[in-house]
Image (cartoon, rainbow, N blue to C red):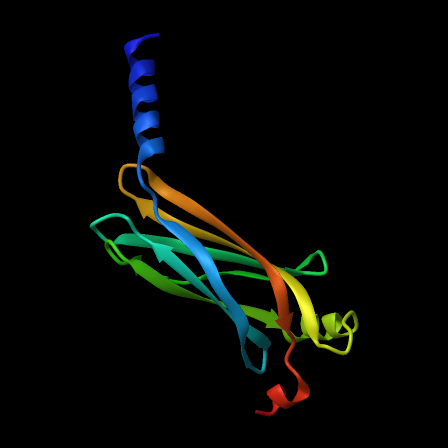
Length: 151
């Protein structure tokens, strides 16, 4: 093994042992009905073990129900993670009305749908560069009722 390979292995081991930010989805709930879509709000807690703030490059999401993607997108300018603290991030998921109408045909009287929310939190770690924290949550969520459209 030459010197370059030894150096690469040394760095790889050190990077693997470095503490990294950790995240979890704490809640997904109905938020609002707009003229274009139904909005759901996902709350994501991210803990930053570093003594400096870390820029968030991008938050990507994919919202699935009945084994198909019903919404996807990115959160523009998500900000930074607070130094040595936990940051609460709000991820607004917008589902177009036509998708909701097609889901209504597939549900029962309870107005609940099964969902899977995948979030990729891309942060810029010093030395390492862009690092994606993958998150996934499955659950049930209420579709808006007629009264929500006129509230």
